Image (tube, rainbow, N blue to C red; front, side, top):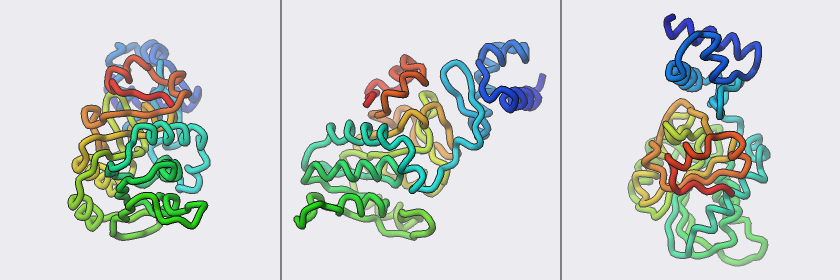
Length: 258
């Protein structure tokens, strides 16, 4: 049976059942576990399904991003726990790259509990959150907003941002992807956002990925970090019920469950 036919049959099953185990795919299509695994990876890359521990679930399009105001309210408690875990690993005097996203916007709020950092970001929301102090004191951090085009999303982007990133060297890049996988690393839906994240990684000594449980085992359009590029992966406690923890700990030795 050709892969195209197998993929079609698996999609039909997903439409009917919404979720399907690896064993069910093997039985229905009379294929090996390795062939089922390859087909599941391909369906996830296509954006029609999401791999979870033991099988797949049907999704409308897991590799796309909702608007920031929607994402900011989704799993907000988990994202704040992740942000606090990241902040606990930072010390005064460090320089940070921070990309744009709902988790990094929450991270910016939590960074107000520290002082003495240099924060380089393309996120307009992160800059706003960093500067919203409750008292009329001066800013606690040196904040650098990367210049570039602003379109519909609350961030700067384009070649100007990439060029500015390469003017700096940071201690840590703190990034929040659309998806992260124990096999493929971190990925984004938009190529421009992926290029920014990739440049930040190249200009940093250390890369910290912040991803709530809904982003695990998700592969989006553009990979910007391999597993080897990621120094630390921070996720939330709900991840333990969703992923193969041993697989993730093997790929990410510094896996933090917040």
